[in-house]
Image 1 (spheres, rainbow, N blue to C red):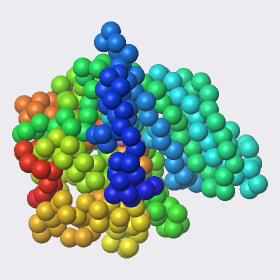
Image 2: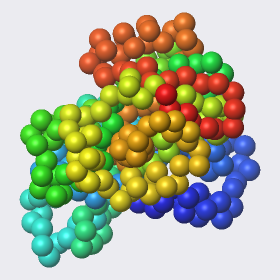
Image 3: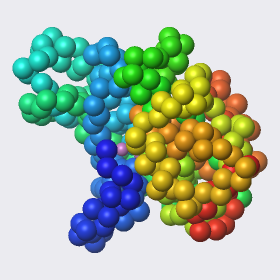
Length: 326
Ligand code: CO
Ligand code: CO
């Protein structure tokens, strides 16, 4: 994964299109592209693929698929169909293992009501898997990075710490409870969170993935012309995430995230451990969105009833994209 700063630079070199059918394109750094079909219909298009984050092939397939679908939900849409993207090491890995990975993808596709209608594979020393997903969204109800409004509560729908836990897996030091909680969180779709957000009239949302909560919220705050205040004590983390960070088990991506976002964050009296946890690079993380204050407790209750870990983690105020921790 590229640095947030590097990526923004590379994308800025691309010619942007002024095709009137493009409702959401490259300019806003959003989660997915949105294409207006007319007659109140729009398509969402997104692609994501990842290297293995767990040891079990089918579980990795499920996580990669849920991760690929997340950007559709982050835009307020529903998936229609997908194309598998596979990089596979034919010399070292049996094809039965690849079948397991793809079966994991199908498990999740089925859960999401999405058809897999094709795909492409290449040979590669390091395996990668993901799905190019096409979805549908009501063009008037698209959730974007620039849609946060003044004086809203911020809701997060999954615990943080996946990057740290998957690094502990690679180091061979992960404990069972953290592993299980991380897998359950990564396999979970953001479909319910998305539907609840849309029906509560939310306009600003994103999913927390490679750039961490601080990175994605920082991008969203900037694009929306808002500052964000975070209530650090209210933010949920996976079981041993803090302990691992204290032990120095921190993914390189998380450190790069923090270095990139640091200027935008007023950390108050919080430590580097806290900041690393908040910047942790997530795979298949939850949604973060802004909701009007009179609706936020209902939204949290509704999500919790669905089994979603929903937490009110902060609020917005008009500004230039600063995040302050308190
Ligand atoms: Co995203
Ligand atoms: Co993505």
